[in-house]
Amino acid sequence: MEIVEGPRLVVLPATRYVGIRVVTPFRGMFAVRDKLMAELYEWLDDRGVTDFGHTFFRLHVIDMYGPMDVELGVITDHEGDERVRPGILPAGDYASLTYVNHARRANRTLVEWIRDNGHKADSRDVSAGEQFACRYEAYLTDPRTERMKTRWQVGLNIQVAAPDRP
Image (cartoon, rainbow, N blue to C red):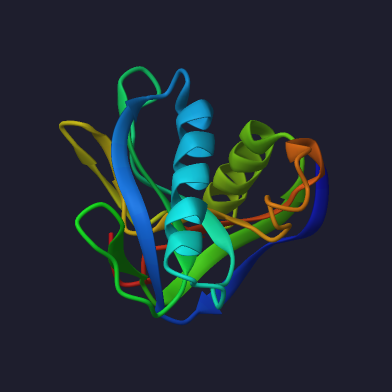
């Protein structure tokens, strides 16, 4: 894993997007992500939408041994439909790490940095797993022009709880 920037705390604004949200097992999750990415790009192309920002993969609920509630989206102000729905990445304080290659190591590095620096992810335990206020990987390299995932520059962001929140 190559760390490009961070880990560090950043303040991010509320950001509008459209995305496709599904529940899928952890095993095979990235193949599902890739299919959703192709579907979303086709949806954008069919509507002539070219003015969108980064593609991202959001983890709503994590259960490494069960279903994962995930969403593939792009930053845009455009409206969605019954399949591609609008949403907002919430404003707030985020632990952030930009890396290339080895997503699992990057995630572990950022989670450990959060803990070691006295922060807490804004998450809670629910029956389906750990639910996050906002946790996502933004693909800073355009996946449509760079097919080699090991070359993608990725911004990993996990919203942290406000200091006065448990």
